Length: 406
Image (cartoon, rainbow, N blue to C red; front, side, top):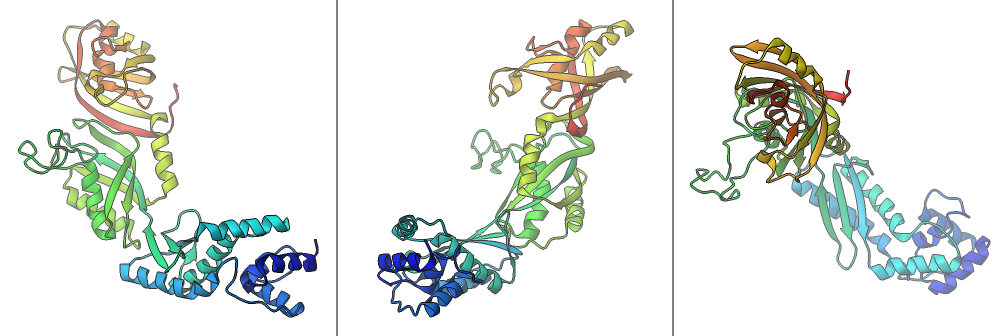
């Protein structure tokens, strides 16, 4: 089908009630031009077309672009947002989109659809007004404009992500905010009306200053695994990503924020390497938690005497079968998991056995030591032949690479 044949069919279907945008859009594969409207103007001039309106296909929606873009600018300015990128989308009456698809089907062509054309043209206008760039993967703002009736505008403020590593230098604080078990966060006598099981958490200590600086609505903390409340996180620290939802301020200085977090944490938590991150990185961090090796330092009390020969048998610990520990059975599925001890060394310290254990992610160290009443096999207790109990535990390292046995 040549230009004239397609043009005749299109004008017959639309009864010549078609705008220049929709006209040009149906000839993108046959007529050169820098845009659909200019392509339509070229066709109108070349074939002396007499067009009328309103456009049967789009209802002259392209004439409303300037008004819509102005409303977007006004709304963004009202919110007082910082941003550098935007993605623009639109909503149209479904019958309008269906008619557009049907016309292209009747003409036997696969040119650009109405909505894609409108999104692009409105997007160009919005980007120019806002003075930012278009971003399709991870924009700061997502703008949705509804053309069904009176124009309506929605602004979605996408999260801001930062990542780094944290050290937890004291025992007795959880990684994330822990709602009171009795009142479920509402506040009661048990929690002194705080709604929390513990006064603070790693999440709150890190997120607080950053949330204030970004003027975000709230924060979500994503760690590469987690340590128990009574366990310290030392050494190089644990990787984390902090997600700030609906931030109004994005032009932040991570180095200054890191200093402020550490100052206000008063030695309970330290952060290092704070920098901007992405949603993709958050997913990678969560997915890689089980593949990262961990190095632990455990102080162990033994209920009985052991010899050096007994201790040498600890080197035989390799593949460990662990049924879900009793202490976490209320929140974890009851099943048997296999994990590996990659390295183990020992020493005596103040009457306790000091163990340095390198293990696969997901290995329960306290149960590896005690045996958890037979739910973990083999264990330090079963190998030594005496009851063993972990009295203090520190995480010394969370590895970057997958676990491997040396």
